[in-house]
Each structure stands twice: as structure tokens, then as C-alpha cells.
Length: 123
Image (cartoon, rainbow, N blue to C red):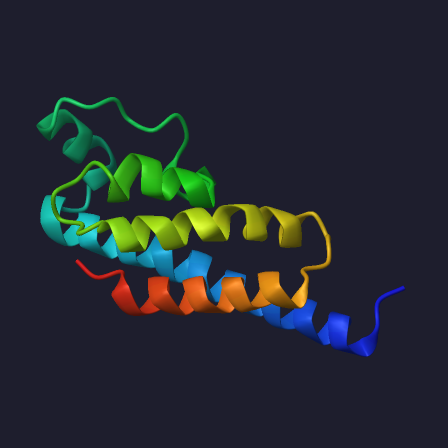
């Protein structure tokens, strides 16, 4: 049974991850539309001779957004620091998504990396 502090921590973690994932998704989508037009999902991979992602944009996982877009297209500035914070987030995101309680240290990591991504992900 979770304590009230743990429940509160997990509620905050869910809300923060929701915000980060939606921000990443919408930032990528808007930047791709601005750079490659409304048919960016098919146009951009052809332009750079890259394979299209295996699923539609909205069906991709949080990790796949970085893999298929942030790392591949020149409109994104994926610094090593930003990449590091994404890699900190992945296991924490999976832990929260699978209803495993975060330790206080993990929660602090989640907050630090989430805020970094929200602040630094720019096109």
C-alpha cells in the first residue's frame, strides 16, 4: 500500500510525463509541418532518402519520436545534453507507465530531466 506521499509523488509524475510527452509530440509535429509542409510525414523521409517510421506519427512511442525525428532531421538541435535527459526519462517513464512507484531520487531525476526537455527542446 502506498503512503499519501508516494501517491502524491506518482500523481505528479503522471502529470509531468503527460506534459512532456505531449509537448515533444506537438513540437515535432509543428516543426515538421513548418519545414516540410502538411504532407511532412511522407515528404520528409523521401527528401532525405530515409525510411518512414513503421507506424503513423501518433502511434509512435516516446522513444521513437527521438529516434525517427529528433536524431535525423536537421531542423532539430539534439544536443548531447538534451539526448542525455531523454535517456534519463525513458526508464522512469516506463516505470511510471507500468505502475511502479518511483523513489524520491527517481522522482527528482524525472523532474530535473523533464524540465530540461521542456525548456531546451526548440527548433
